[in-house]
Image (cartoon, rainbow, N blue to C red; front, side, top):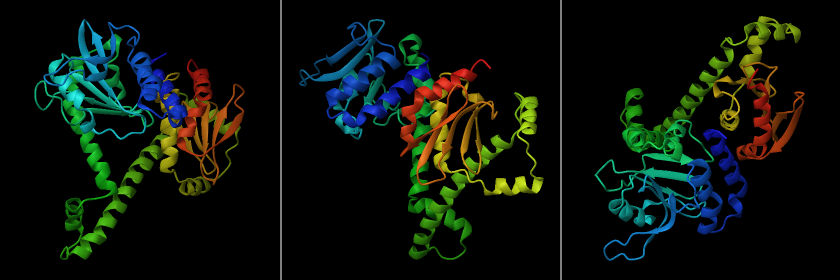
Amino acid sequence: MSFEERLTSLAAKIHQQKAAIQTEEATKNAFVMPFIQNVLGYDVFNPLEVIPEFISDIGTKKGEKIDYAIMKDGEIQILIEAKKIGEPLNINHASQLFRYFHVTTARISILTNGQVYRFYTDLDAPNKMDEKPFLEFDFLDMDDHAIPELQKLTKSAFDVDSVLNAAGELKYVGQIKRVMANQFSQPEDDFVRFFASRVYEGILTQKVRDQFALLTAKAAEQFMSDQVNGRLKSAISRPSSTAPAAISKQDAEIGETQSADDEISKKDRIETTTEELEGFNIIKAIVRSEIDVKRVAARDTLSYFGILADDNNRKPIARLHFNRSQKYLGTFDGDKNETRHPIDTLDDIFSHADMLRETAKAYAEI
């Protein structure tokens, strides 16, 4: 299995089983140990690689345990502290990580609840663990930018120097993204004042600021939606460089006889939603283990959101039928017959991961 496939497999397991997990110990057995073993590639049953409940007495603190210490080349490289699935990750609840980081050779510490993993190092002061993570990874909301950095911590490609060299940029870029997300959803007074002062010529009274707080949040939401829709429409309308002849032949076969005016009118009525784009990204993450993700394209239509290989209607991977009260995920068999599966949330897509991968695999060598 590829690294991305191992991530997707564990993500599907977390999605399916998290509701049944009630304790920290169950979280470690169900999710954290598979992360160490299957994702990072360390043998959890080999004490020369993974030490559970690692103890290193520190001053007056005797017998304190860290959940896992990962060894490589005879030295401790990574410390892991685990909490129960669903529990908020609060650095104040991980005092052992701070103390053990100071007295061991570890340069990486991980705080996790089995779904979200936060990675720490000592950027702010040597041998003192930072209070803010340089990387955060959520298995149910995987960030493509974080995957290559996470792969550097695997046993086969362990490169702590490379991770630490990139940690500063990762830390601050991640923090800026979170600040921007917070400001876009709940803009603070300084943020509101910055924009209001550039478009409003009157005095910024409290009433005006309250009004612009709502307007700024609305403008930010519309701006992000416009950016996403603009990129998707550009990708959809861009001529395919992989098989233009096949597409032209296909267009001729399906008998597109509408006039140019009709086509323009139809496109104007198509509205790509944020939920459709999120579903598209989930399916890309699932099938990337079978097919180059650059080959996975999207076409939005009036009746469904199509996900294709090579932007070719003859290579359907899935369809999202989201423009109705009951949402459906459409999957395809070997004869390209569609089966619609009712879904309630985007996470339900993971339940059909095997079928999606099987369909994408059929196009991998075509």
